[in-house]
Image 1 (cartoon, rainbow, N blue to C red):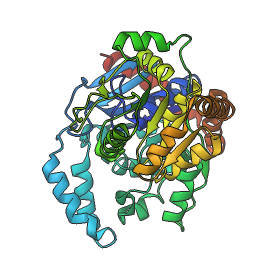
Image 2 (cartoon, rainbow, N blue to C red):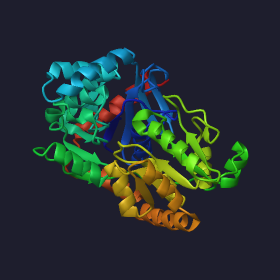
Image 3 (cartoon, helix red, strand yellow):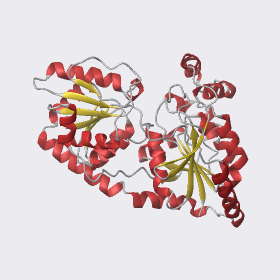
Image 4 (cartoon, rainbow, N blue to C red):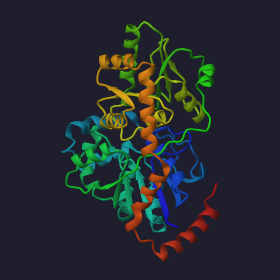
Length: 411
């Protein structure tokens, strides 16, 4: 059985970032086929990278996670200063400057880097989730000949830094989440071979979930838009708040905006904006069942898991039309509408009456059931290694190292 390591900046049930959720979900299913573990840091908060989890090995959802201490928390003021210095000089800033920025970006976990450097021969394959963090930029080159990169990239200013020109030549292969992501990267790096599987993720609602339970628990009787995810300006939340408040001034009936997720910005005090914070999985699915429309305002996405979850329960979506990935998902699925300004936002909400919502939701559900199933995704991941020969020596080494690790490193 191949021994595979997933590398991601943070990981745990309490982590609600898209890349991290994707990594853990894929690991849960692929651990049936591979001797798999996730290499990550002890951080929970992506802003400061403050250590939260203990270092060492923990099993989460049937997956072994090996965590390493973050040596230096992120200084936000320093990081923002470096970003402002580099932003106007994306092509001309020296590699040294850009790597200083990446160290400040973090998470800076030298023990993780040292572990990979010292134990790389014990693994057949490494898969790195997201291009953007230090855990990928500084570690992937150490194992480039057996590394696959899942970039989770989109059209943001950081992807235009010149250091990526050589970095994206290093991986053995790539895994993409949407066709739009692959197309964008082919445009950004026209001289690099960016062929690879377009895998995505499957979603599975729980056996039971209910709108009535959610509405009763939180005393919400009105129709409502639902936002799920990190409440952050970079996710389009500030614009969403402004658009929703403008909508409420125009429409005669009642409506709420319900937010599920951890805030990193102030949430406007408004009688129709309801912030419930981070909730468990069951509550999330109950909220999806209860909402009228899921709204995704982010201008930057490589894959939106929450769109797939909404469609899985037959709910329509409303997305930011400036994001090619979200727009493409809506166009292919015919499961939602999109907007580019406040007027289009209002028209879209008004257009989605009960009949339209049912039609869009049903079309989205059919799209997910046809394209995002675990059997197909597992097949795509397994096919990645069809050209990869696993040696008997590696298998023997794996058996020895697994036994030693179980004795010495288990918490």
